[in-house]
Each structure stands twice: as structure tokens, then as C-alpha cells.
Image 1 (cartoon, helix red, strand yellow):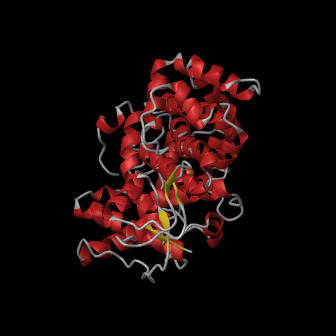
Image 2 (cartoon, protein in one colour; image 1 turned 90 degrees about the vertical axis):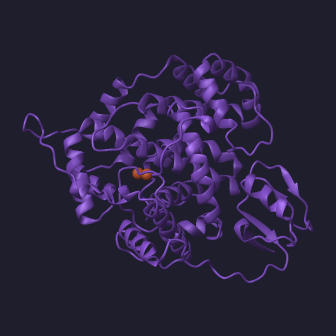
Length: 424
Ligand SMILES: [Fe+2]
Ligand SMILES: [Fe+2]
């Protein structure tokens, strides 16, 4: 049996195995002959790969030349620069590179030259007192724990999450009392993440569908973002920052749904919050962070490496400690803490997903989390994921569409019909 990407399907191909949607729903039986209409439905259902009998030997996709060779060449240089000048050799990183070139060329062709506005050209501001900012990781965590003002419902959901006796009905009741939170959760549930072919009209229905614990984690994630998403931060485009976070969340949930639908919420929320430590750093030590950003851009190294060198810790460690204080499950706090530990820390399927999502979103320019450079992922990550590189193109397309929808929910729009945001 051979799986091929939905982007490479043709009418007349025959399924060599049953086709099941990411949410477990049966779609088509083994032996079904694909039509143009059924291929379109598979794309809408978020299917990335399909088992096909007698699949033709498909050439690995080459670099698309949709934008003219000059634009493509410029895009290739920008993407190489993003990958710290390291030309990828492994098949999956080559595919990420190719997709990055396509998306960058698309942006350049539309005149979106913001890709090139790196902080190396930043005029370094001076601290008003002329002094130096000083803060340790534990000092920042303590201060932030006192500063962040979460709504009442947050603490009640925390209690419910920690109590083994909490029933789905109790959790649904708690969430339903907060109408604004309930409305946002229902919009997320209906946004296509779960691939449910009908509208989910109520929180009890959503809880029954995805589980009380999963809905609680999602509710905490939405509440945490709402605490942070209107805080202005210097030197960072907040729209681009949250777009990156949502993009990572969407890629992570799609990758999770391909193999283990039971961890979708955890990966989605980890994606949303993975860089929150950086936001907090920008708030606590803005002048130091401006200097660190400039250094990273000048040396063409990932911002996380410059943070470690200058501060002795990084935003991932800080973010992990913060979400631990904010009552998220330990498995999620570990994901946030290790999302840049690609060499030794990526030893589980969820960790491999989050790191891949971060690199894919950065290289294909779905927003920007503050870092202009990432290192290519080691081969081990792809072996853990065990997904064909050809599936990535569909994932990027689906992510671009869903990111705009979910981003507007988090930023106060109403999803599909809400305000749209420019890319990146
Ligand atoms: Fe990060
Ligand atoms: Fe990131």
C-alpha cells in the first residue's frame, strides 16, 4: 500500500485501504474509485494523504516557477538566510525549504517586503535611566504570576482540571457560565479543526465530542491568550507574533490529527502559547531584548540562541515555567519548555510535532514570533513523525486558510466573517 498526497490525486485512482478522517469518521471504503468531487471533499475534510492502489511513481515536486526566476531566486536566498545559511539535505527539510521559497516568492510578488525588515537595522534605544535591566528567570516568573489577571472562570476550570471527580457535565456547566469564553470555544470547535460535518451548537455538545479535559485545556488556552493579546510590546509586531503562534497551533493540530487525534487540543494550546515567554521577556526587559534581537539578526543566528547567551536562559524555559504556574498539565508545560531543544529534547511524537510546526511556520512566513532564523530540524524528528514529506504542501495550504480564521477569533473578530489580516 502506498500513500500519496491529496495534491497528487487524479480522478480514476482506486483506494487500496479504507479512508478514515482525522476525527475517526469513516469516509470511503477500500476499492472506491476517486472522482474530481470526492478528491475535493478529501481536501475539505483535511485529509493529507491517501492510500492508492498501483500508485504511479511520482516525481518529487520540484521548485515551482510560478513567479519568474528572479523572484524565485530572491526568495531562495531569503529562505536560505532564514535557515542560518544551511542548505537542507534531508528530504523533509528540502520540502520545507521548497515550500518556504514558494510562500516567500508569493509575498515578494505581492510587494510584501516586510520579510526583509530584520532587526539588524533596528535603532537601538537607550534605557531611560542609562542603567541596565536585570532579571532572573525566577524573578520574572514570580512578577508575572502576580501581574497576570485571569478571569474567575479560569481558576474554577483549573480546580476542575485538577480534581479527578470532575464530570464532563460539571466542566460544561462551568464554561457555559462565561458567555464570551463559550462563544469563542464554539467558534473554534466549528472552525474545521475537528472536521465535524455539522454545527456544534452548545458547550455540553462540544464537551461530549472532544472530552471534558480536552475542552478545559482549550478553555484555559483561550483565556490565557485573552490576558496577553492586547498588551502592547515594543519592537514586535503583535499581529505578526500572534499570527505565528496561531499558525504553529494549526500546523501542530493537523500533524497530531494524522496519527493521534487524542492529543489535538494539547498540541493546539501548546502551539498558541509556545512563544509566550518571549512576549513576557519583551515586557520585562525591553531594552535588553532589543539588543539581543539586533545581535541575533546581525549574526544570523536563532533568537533563542542569543537569549541563552545573554540571559543564561531562554523564552522556552521561561514560557514553560509560566504555563506551569498557570495550571496547565505537565505534559503541555514540558512541550513549551522543550520546543527549541531539537538535538536531545525531541524524543516524543508531541515534541517532534511542536518543533516541526515552529520551523514550518517560520520558514513559510506564517507570521513571525520574533526570530528571523531557525536551524534545520535533525532527521530524527522526521523519523518520529513518520509522515511523507509530500503531505507538507497540503498542510501549509490548510494552515494558511485556518490561521486567518482562528487568528481573528482570538483577536476579537468573528472567524470566517471577522476582520481578515494581512499575511504575514
Ligand atoms: Fe520559540
Ligand atoms: Fe515560535
